[in-house]
Length: 186
Image (tube, rainbow, N blue to C red; front, side):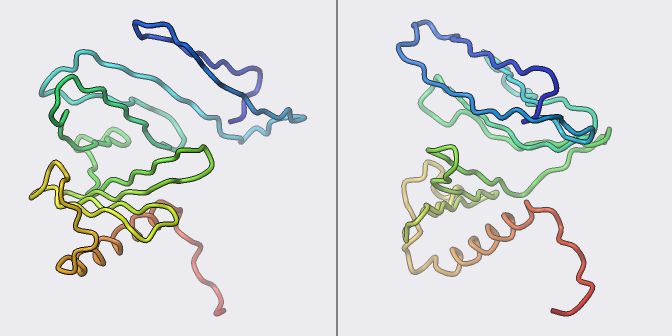
């Protein structure tokens, strides 16, 4: 995360109780100069409480050149049931109609440099793969919306699991930029 003159990191306790312990570190390196074409990282925080039922929640309104890296969405629900349903909408370059993806990729990191699990969710199914594990999770969100029945090891769902793992891998590969065209046999 390069910066030309300075960087500011602010942490605010918006809770009702004082924070008993707070741990942090900043790891940085001073360079002789930052090149003119170096991209800068921008982050923002948004909050809505209470949320407005029936209205889309705006995560980011961004203009300009750059790359959208992603969103960290944290939901604190006040009721015991599912907090909501929806799709992510991307209006790019002034489009009137949003672009929708047919899936979502989720990764969970218990440590900053190590992925603990990855999940692929489409309109009906959710499949999760754990790091260095032979087991996983597969749920039919239409038939089992509260995810009580794990279909991962069920032989009746082996073909479905294979198809979802293939879609999962394709979605992971599509996250990367398109490779250079092949110009010579290898």
